[in-house]
Length: 266
Image 1 (cartoon, rainbow, N blue to C red):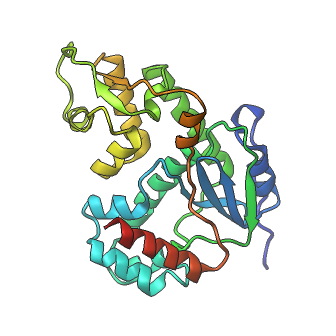
Image 2: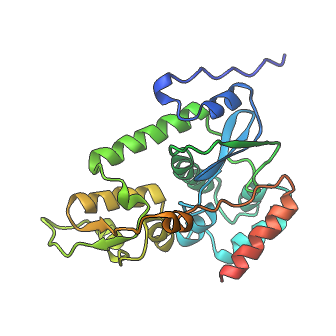
């Protein structure tokens, strides 16, 4: 006998970051929730993928991390992108182990959701029926995504309460370290040049943007890095605008645009 799927328990008020996301979870909606700093993709009320301009995509983490050759990634996109089953194709073709894909995908999902759920005054938009071309990997309940986002915010604030360096270019202070700098933080510090932001450094190293922020805040707490002061005024606000990728219900159009953008970036 077929039984009804359990209805997720409502989140506590302390963990609700997006009332709209809560409503979509309650109605078991499928589609794309677009916010200022990212997009959450839902299927049956659960988060199945997330993207943000602030974070490296799953393609970067898979290829830079050595789990997948770049040619293998583009082959998967060409073969399965229009059918929105890139993840399944990678596993079925033997290019990526199922467990490795799942771990990487969860990392990308939580990473992008952290930025997508950042406070904003701009109303969110929801496009019903839109699915991401990566396809099904492992859905995550909305309340779990919100709890993890809050946990990450609290962790960053405990390390160093100043958030200016999360988005601004970063520079070295020139001060000597009080003690040895761990190798992981040394690699991050090596990318600090007065021009790169935390997002740029994460892209350069092929790492989670959130974990890059953790290292940068620890370096800031140690007095080794600081945010470069940015110009203020209307002109600065115009240049700081975040551009989100266009969302379309037609997977072929979306795929072609991503391929075009990737080729232009080569």
